[in-house]
Structures are given as C-alpha cells and as structure tokens.
Image (cartoon, rainbow, N blue to C red; front, side):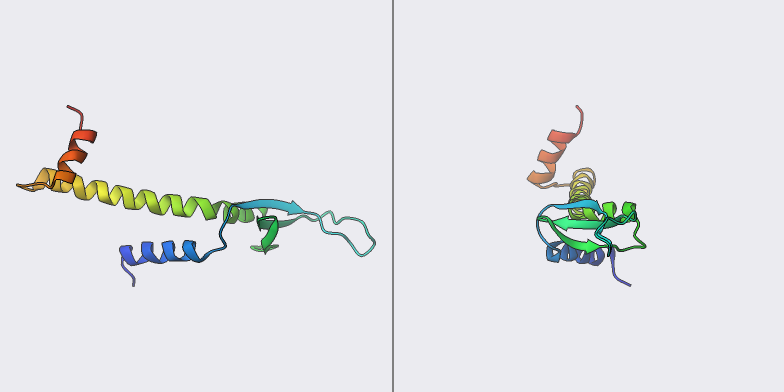
Length: 114
C-alpha cells in the first residue's frame, strides 16, 4: 500500500503527463448514415479543439464534464494539500520548537492574530 506522500506524488506525475493545455467539454450530435444528426449526444473532452476523450463512461455527460475540469481541478487540489502540509509543519514548529526557524516565525507573524 502506498503512503499518502507517494500517492500525492503519483497524482502529480499523472497530471504532468496528461495532455497539456485547457480542456473543455462538449456534446456532439454525430451525423447519421442518412446525412442527418443523431438524437443521441456523444460527450467529448476537448483540448485545443480536438477530442482527447470521446463517448466514454457510459456516455455520461456529467462524467465527461468532470474529466474535462480535472485537468485544472486536480493540480489545484494537489497544490492546496501541499500548501496546507507546509502550513501545518510551520505551525507545529512554531508551537513545539524551542528555536523555531525564521520561516516559521515569519509565518506566525503573518498568520496568527495578535
């Protein structure tokens, strides 16, 4: 079983390897064999106007929309976890150390109400 730190590292690596650029979500009504349009929408995740995921997860538009936003949401959440971890380390050092580092002291001055 991987540790919490290993899991966050793996998530960050998957994000870094994913197709770059802004992802978006669209529903497409494909052409039928008779030249018309299907009444069944096919969810797509697009990057730079090209489909990178199409008609997946049981053709669930909400799942496609979630996937499209994951390109921005997951790195944001990983960064927030890392920020909070650092904040906790500094707070712990400030409260428990006889000689907190200058960084911990500065954090305390900036964040602890006086």
